[in-house]
Amino acid sequence: MKWSYRIARIAGIDVQVHATFLLLLAFWGWQGYVAGGIDEASRSIWFVLLLFLCVLLHEFGHAMAARRYGIRTPDITLYPIGGVARLERMPENPAQELVIAVAGPMVNVVIALGLWLALGMPKITARVFSDGLALELLQTNIMLVVFNLIPAFPMDGGRVLRALLAMRLSHSQATQIAARIGQGIAVLFALAGITGGNYFLLFIAMFVFMAAQQEAAYAGMRAAVAGMRVGDAMITRFQTLRADMPVATAAEEALHDTQPIYVVTDASLRVIGVVPRNDLLIAAGSAGHAPVGTLAQTLPTVTADGSFDEAFRLMQESGSAVLPVVNPSGQIVGLVSLNLLRERARLRK
Image (tube, rainbow, N blue to C red; front, side, top):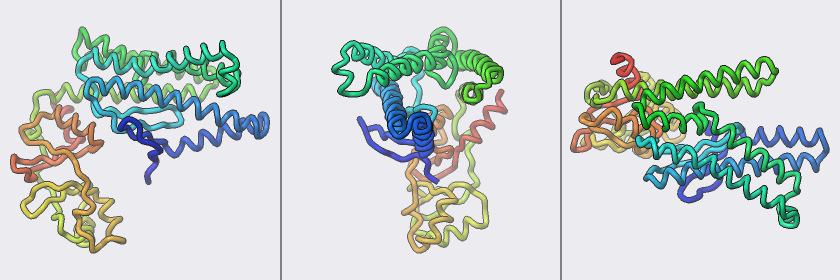
């Protein structure tokens, strides 16, 4: 089931809203209604929408800074707990990562300054929203700046700390230190949440702890496989599907194995795309006579001589955990998967 839906495309970036965001609006609307009727419900919903506009602008701050260094942002997704700008990759240069990380909170600083100035001009403020709402947004933007600069992943402060450390240490070492500091802060959050009965803070603590752990594991994995080539560990035993094969026939074959994804090729074994097994089985019911090629999703390819690091980067950009490995003629010779890279990293440690 699809959970995120595109609501706009701005500056070449898809703006998406996660379905659970509607639950947040409903919750605050109901809270407002209980407290003061329909007027307070309307005010609460209006505040949440304005707040997430600030969050969206924050994420665009990251995206525009990344664009300066040639890094694309395919999409920005708004969740109930905040926004995420999905960069195609993070820069290797620590100074560039520092600029990208700081750009988001700086947007909130500018918004807060604008609201502060607006509060000094009541006639202008009244045309947009009430003084009380403007003050609340001002305070919230200040809180966003402070919260985001806490030195813990996945907050911007964690990336700022990692960038500063990476100016003196290796990227992997800097990440490990920043992650440990982040996990220490998460433990303090958890203790504060438990003693104060604040379960939301406890949820944030768990989220921060796991995010720091994931960031450290990813950095360690990259460091462990540095210098390795795709051909050293690619999968060579797998099944492919011809693009002109009927979907129903391909689905029948898929029922007899557990391969999660199939490479779709032409008659000369040149890669056309891939199709997940589940998509194949679902399509068999409604498009059984259509050729498999109509279901193929385009993915970047790598060569056997390519580095694992390059495979990592392409996986990040494409959002796929599996990539086809091709020869110079574009013919399929293997597969490389994220799980395989993790296994190789574990064995080399």
